[in-house]
Image 1 (cartoon, rainbow, N blue to C red):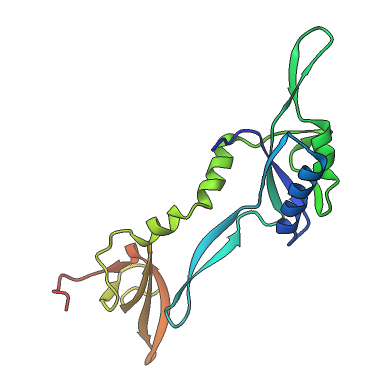
Image 2: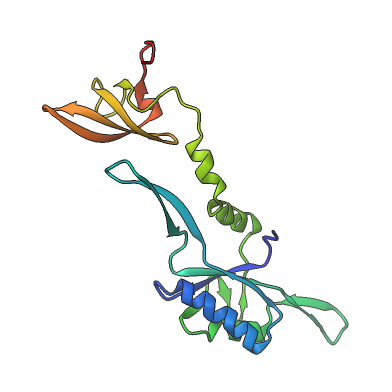
Length: 197
């Protein structure tokens, strides 16, 4: 994927999906060849319910913004030099679309593109591969293990592991005669050398 020539566009709140649809529709109707792609970025997150069920939910990475990829127009000046610039017809197509408020980082009618490394980082955050990597981190802890908390506000308490999500350990501690859920990092917990049952 090419990460050059991406621009951030501000849109009305909760109108990201409709703004993308309208931009793509207007591109087709007006036969614009410079507007190459329009995206609103969603990141998948794993959420665990109180019952311990895992669900995957889509969450907007940049609420109120969409990304547009626009190919620069090459214009030849009177002296014969060639200059690439943002196409004025595409600028009008984007800014006059319902729900679109303005370009981010725009100088008059010449918006500045985002850095390719920033765009790559955003698209990588939306990739599904990070979910699997987060779940498959090796761990010495297992669900049902009783561990000792060695750091943080629950230092000294025993923790029964209820769930493991990447670096987070969801556990139950016995406090005031009740079982209380709490979240820990793996570095806050210590497993004593005992055989696993």
